[in-house]
Image 1: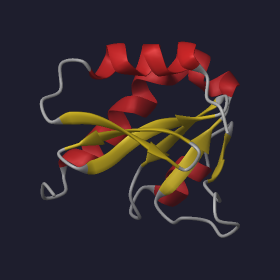
Image 2 (image 1 turned 45 degrees about the horizontal axis):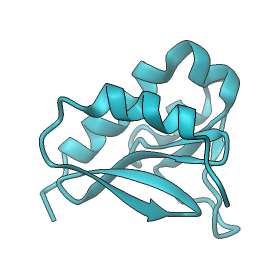
Image 3 (image 1 turned 30 degrees about the vertical axis):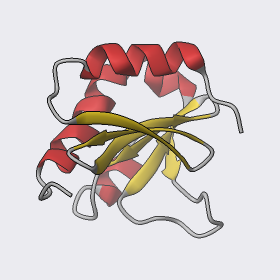
Image 4 (image 1 turned 180 degrees about the vertical axis):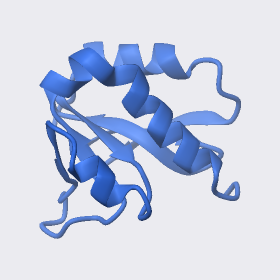
Length: 107
């Protein structure tokens, strides 16, 4: 699956100040890892964000989100964010992913 290069560049720009940032091909897209833990990524035209199990239901309650179900089963703690939300709140969503990944021990 291809991913939106323009969106990838916007996410890179938002993440450039974070130490320990790497990129990895995952889930048919590109994931951004913070100290070895996935924070967010781009799959197709959507942003995937690791919000964590405690913030999962709240994230799903927001418009333009849905469970990340790459394997056919929802991955609890991870959501897809559709284009309409990305345009308005990309920085907020990326920050959520960074905050959760930053709360985990480095790998």
